[in-house]
Image (cartoon, rainbow, N blue to C red; front, side, top):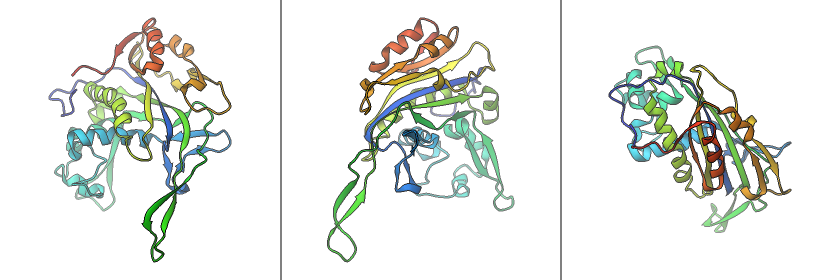
Length: 301
């Protein structure tokens, strides 16, 4: 596995990157809203399903924790318990730089770390070089009609079972945009090895860390990280180059969508693309190879 321990020699990135991540969710809850009975986040006017960047980062962090332990991830528990940031900082000797040295997520996504010995509430913030947008579905999404579940455990003083709510979508093909700034990486000590860790693990994380009752049904279809020939280039949200048509009024699977990546692929001339495609989207990777320098993922150990 690529460099999950802090690299002995920091190999700094020398170019910006942009990311497109697409995965599907079938008969599950992609991202519940705690302010709305944990319903999937939706734009009710357009029927667009919405998922926060925090959800995707949580998949990534949880896989890191399961493989390397809580000490390798800044946004995590301590000995299985939720703690405040000051208590978490004690695990690193009270030194914010040691947080960066130890934690991949802090180097990539940034961190807000308390200042030891300073006035209460003061902190130092590191803006992460890797930022992800909120994801949205590439089509209209329907909530499942069945929403109630029962439990055999009785309610208080009633002796009867409880009835709860279980909100899910039938199907949602979600797309996320990400951007990595190599200049900002200099401050957080993010390395090429850190980027490779994200390249490798985000695909596995979506599969393995979604194995819960409400989340099972997640499947990644496309991950690509683009390095342009120009070091400082950003093209902007790559999702705008993907065109989607709904073949049916009720979308229940990938086969009900017509996806067109031609505008995106045309942009990739002379770029280096780190990519991984599902079997269903293998043709997208094949077309990319015709115009770009494609590096197949995962990276070798």
